[in-house]
Amino acid sequence: MRVKITASELSGVLQAPASKSSMQRACAAALLHEGETLLLNPGHSNDDLAALDVIQKLGATVKVQPDHTILITSKGIHPQSTEINCGESGLGIRMFTPIAAISSLPLTIAGSGSLVTRPMHFFDEIFPLLGVSIQSNEGKLPLKIQGPLKPVSISVDGSLSSQFLTGLLMAFGSANPGNAVINVKNLASKPYIDLTIDVMRHFGKSVIHQQYASFSFQPASIPPPYAIQYTVEGDWSSISFLLVAGAIAGSVKVTGVSRHSTQADKAILFALEQTGCTLIIGNDYVETGKGNLRAFHFDATHCPDLFPPLVSLAACCSGTSVIKGISRLAHKESNRALTLQQEFAKLGVDIELVGDDMMITGGKILQGTTVHSHHDHRIAMACAVAALRTVQPVDIMVAEAINKSYPDFFQHLAELGAGVEIIEQ
Image 1 (tube, rainbow, N blue to C red):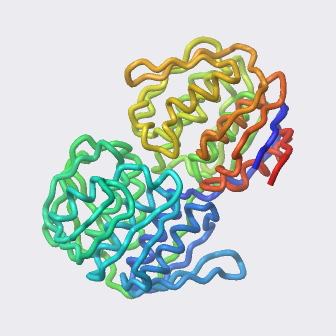
Image 2: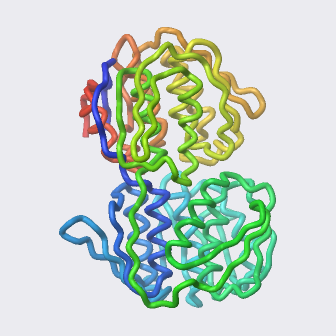
Image 3: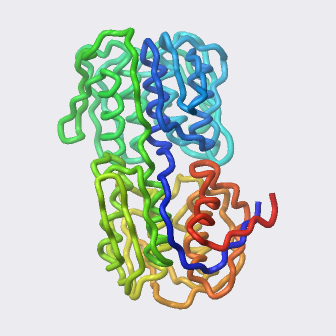
């Protein structure tokens, strides 16, 4: 799909889309929960749909209700298929693989798109310590595993992604962990682990950590079976693009997000505050508006998904903005440091990569051109937001990449007043 974005003034109010980080974790917790779970405000991105498919293949039943809530019924891990496909979801593959390993059946864990090139050697190193046999494709997908996973005290490296730890925490929490402890060094994206622990707590599983260096488990607070109701949070990752759009091109109010959320990408507020844009933060909404934007410094090591919207923001700020943490970008849907540098250069934005820092020189007139998403949802959205300030329209190639996380993105931009034209389906 090719989408043309024309420079526009924005104004309006939108409801935040559901967080796929929250949704996917809730799906996993509902699968592990023996009983019924009612999901309110469920997401419908490709990653969300993949998670629902996975839990059904692992034994849960899923029913979409007339009011669009989702009822999940589970008796634990009882695979209905020998192959589990997580689509293109990095969280899905890293979270559901340890959960699937609770079963004693031989299973194949697969994915698609860029996921097949992303490193999974973590499992090659850790699974044998937990009694799980594994055969990978030289550290990549597909994975052939056979459990059952036996929780024992282990030490893991958390520098590549916190998603591996999320999977282990959920699997241990439901596999009679006893006194087992997971020791972690160099943990990345700590706020995402806070989100995992928060979801597990909602489902009666208690995880205690010592400065994120060791994690232990307490007995379930409520014995199963019992009914759970869980409301999927609004997504700070997705609304970061809308908030930046408001800061550079008008006035945007987003409702349905909590200022008390543990989501890592809530940190977008710190960057916006530095720029001098209009910023109003309520208990369940955020509003941004244009201002004389100035450059900012931001450490995105623990929230690397903010790089794309922050680059769009920096492109419209006077001076040189510095974003730290590009070492976290190599194994995303694309190598985002290089992809952002390449695509924003087409718009006339100079991006320099120095060590672990990205330096963006902004404030110049942005040029319209043709850009490519590189099949990366966040690159497509970042280019669309920057296009709100270009002197000519911007054509975004392979724009359907947004379906991975925010399928309504272009529709929502149009509702705010953006010039959005879908050229090809």
